[in-house]
Amino acid sequence: DVQLQASGGGLVQTGGSLRLACEVSGVPFDDYVIGWFRRAPGKEREGVSAISTYDSRQIYADFVKDRSTISGDKKTVYLQLNNVKSEDTAIYYCAASRWYLSPKLRPAPFEFWGQGTQVTVSS
Image (cartoon, rainbow, N blue to C red; front, side):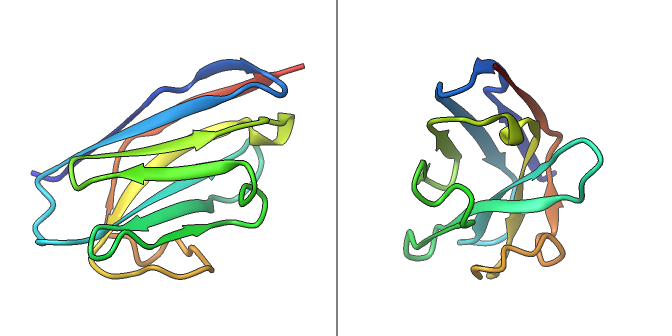
């Protein structure tokens, strides 16, 4: 079975940092793309970042581009988020796609999803 387990969420103060982890197992492809998404209260799910295990290429949404780093390998992918803001409060999910790596970071092409981890930014 495919499993994507997101962890590392919690309460963080404005301006602080956090690192989320996604543990990946059972994906039925030799290589794939792992994406991070988030859903804030009352908003639609949006793409945050993604990394390809084919060639390690990375994609970032504009709203995190200068304060985020995605890294890792086929088993664990990390999302480092610095200088967090109140608008970063959301449930963060990781997901796997066989090939999709686009600046648009659309959720639909991602076939496998894990349960999310809550991030709450306090002032």
